[in-house]
Length: 340
Image (cartoon, rainbow, N blue to C red):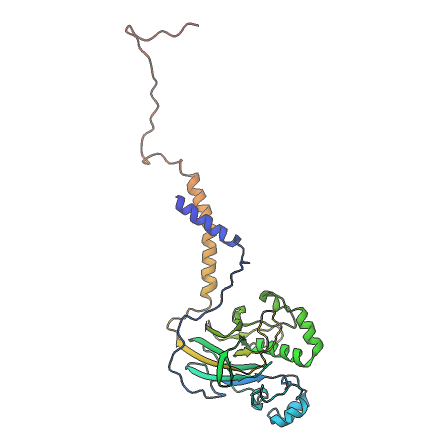
């Protein structure tokens, strides 16, 4: 009885425990970074993009889009050459000026390895179509190479959906090409993840946990309940791709890495593992409902048992017995009653 009371009390007190603990947990991988690596078929299984400070992709007008987004680097330099330095920006023009519409990617079910060269004050991007039938593990190692000598590099790694990446790209453009927007975003930068969705100039990562800032190496895994779909009140549902971003610029987050004025070399390994048993999404609210119902019902059951504990006779069928009267006897008979 005491054990049951203790367990029920513990369940009732769990919701009262504050969740503002200073300890933060990151989504880490449970599998290794080795597998049957296959060559990447670009624009079929993976797409490569980039954000650079000398090309305002995403901020062009309609006429500029019509002239062709696959213009050469020399043509791009004529309009956006204030930040261009060939030694610090190894990106090719097709990375920061991708063709539109973007190619449809196949669901990722194979293992891949690639190396990204991310310029200073830039962002290197890999776009995937993640499969809900596979567990995907990302392994990244960041370094710089100077005079044929490599050294760990501090940068930021983010995983975003399509809608989140659009906000992230807008933030990049605001900070590089629209100064007043960048200043406004900087004022609202120090916000907790649960409030960033209400910030029109802010952005957050997938599930609010897949952000790894100021790091040289990171490994994390992801398992989807089903195809990722963005629901909007003003538009139809949109299928979401996933963007793995290696960030080397000073973004709007306060704890991110600063530009190192060097080219960052990112070694990226993507390992997929087929899932043998996948629970449907509706099992999560069902289990939660069952737990909450149990927590609510158990106190009433224990109280009912406590109130009825003394109502039943011992053995159920035992006859009622009276308490015998104690009498004191003398040698001649009963003791006379005491005189008043």
